[in-house]
Length: 441
Image (cartoon, rainbow, N blue to C red; front, top):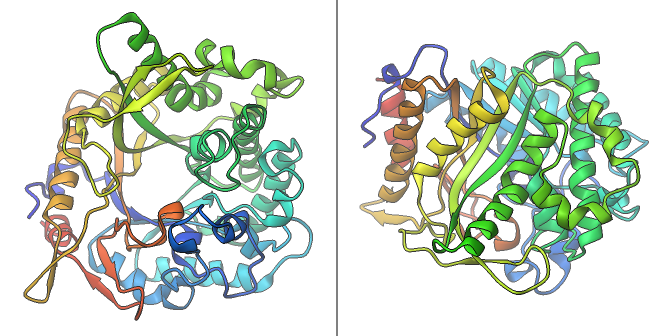
């Protein structure tokens, strides 16, 4: 069981859980158009067993049951994402009313259960028609994204508790265009530079669009990994600082300071689009809160390869099913550093935190003690940071359901609720019941 209880936190601290559209909805339903994830998954070698999100958890048809689980857990908020291709099958132009109707029903179902709807507009599933035009490499994508924002938030924005444009811009830019691990699966430094810049331009454009619609409580959501040097050498220190600049500082600094770190520009500046400096007035559109997605740290060593000249090496700490080290101290450090260097008094929200762990079936129950320990350890660090004056206002656990874990298919289980991917039966795990008890205390 958890040792924390709701009364350990102030009344305005909000607990939630998070999901994303392509990972749970079932993209083959409801008139959704093809996405670059469908193409990526259909390419041999990209995804475990070439699995895709065509059915996923069938949340499209089962959302009432899933929202019952959120409400019964005692959570305050449900963080979900919208599918661009479900609303605009070609990414632009004709609207799929069936898609808009789905998000309308989903929103009303949250409100009916007393849940605060917290929307993320984009969680990685770019319409294939826009990918064909260059996707995040194309400067027009900021306008396309602004138009999508106007369509979807024009329908449901009046009922949103909070909204953020893009989940984890590092994954959209670097992971997908430099490392090639996510769609569109490129390994191209010029594509990377442009994608990383355009994702921030699209973010700012969407913030401005939502402000014009009269929406409030708008934020930005970044992912973070603490960078630990492999040793005390100057080269290792520099390599870790460069990793930190690429992964953590580039996007924060762009949004909150209107500039990019020198350690990133040394590699990417020759490849950035012409006039990129002129986009910062849009990129820095004011937000009302900052979201931190945190799971792990990385141990970084230098190498003699071209920029960025670094390797991630195996660390000594206990690891999750993903092979990620468990390092709660990193979340504590990021909460302090983000407030001190970037956001000041702006509310911070831990918008994702959780772990993949194999389920243990015992006496008909699904035990997941490692997940309970992981969440408790990170909440302890949040409480410590709060006590020291950091304005942390919420915590969202990833994820409600076991789901489609992108290139890793359906193997890695992050859910509070077990999903049998043959029958789609939902079974709350021990961590779900423990959370329910803690939040009702």
